[in-house]
Image (tube, rainbow, N blue to C red; front, side):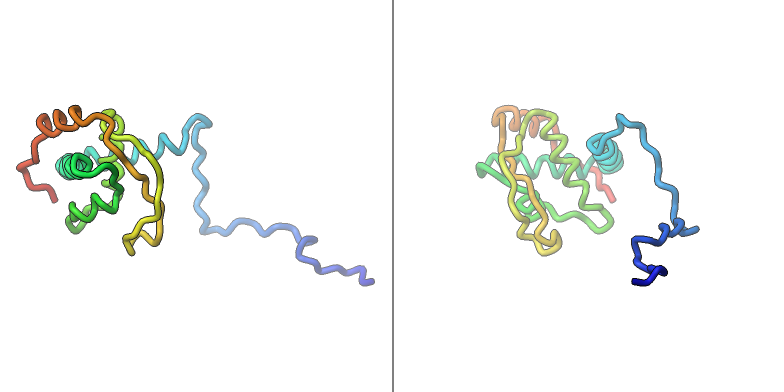
Length: 145
């Protein structure tokens, strides 16, 4: 047996690279949900007209059919160039918080751009509330880039 063992486990760990950015330290109460919600709020504030249009489209889909996913929404509402697809989540969150939709399941996305990602399946919780929301939130007239 050799006394000069060069097994990788016997080597000390390498120091971090000089180019590695420091890992931010978040407060212990800062959750992934909070980070998601803050990001969604930023998108929704910057793209209000698109969020309203997406919400309207989703409610109209759900008034026609029992369940729908982001694939259904994206088939009817084509995002303009320069609008990040994460805005779709802002619309779902807005409708969920309004108590108009709820998640009933999950399925694999059929859109090639989603690379077989998971979609939530949504259903209406309040048909009359959805119709009222549509009446209170007409199609935005201002163009939004």
